[in-house]
Figure 1 (cartoon, one colour):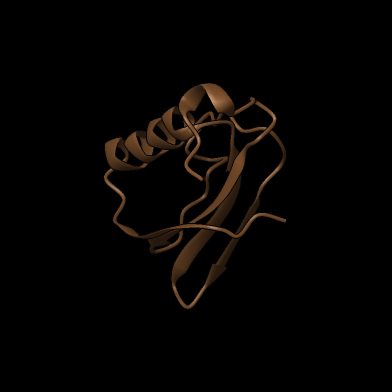
Figure 2 (tube, helix red, strand yellow; figure 1 turned 60 degrees about the vertical axis):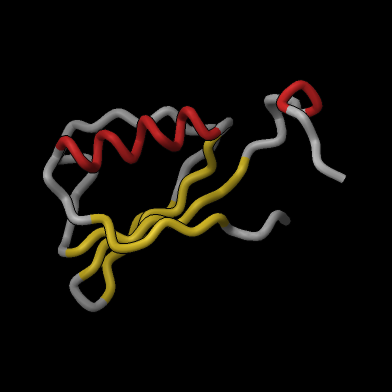
Length: 83
C-alpha cells in the first residue's frame, strides 16, 4: 500500500547514509544540521561516512544542498532499512 504525505507522522523519520569523497569534519565546517537524533560520522579509506536520521525529505535535501555548497563530492546516498 502506498501512503500519502498526510499518512506520515513526524515521528516516522528515515535514516540515510551519505558518503563524501575525502575527509570532512562537519564540526570544523560550522555546518548546522537539523536531525532528530545524534548521527554517526566516521572516515574509512579516504571517505567520510555520515549516518543521520531526518524528519522528512526536505531536511535531507537541505543537508545535501549544504554538502554541495561546500564543494564536496557526494559519492553515495542510501536510505537505511527501518529498525
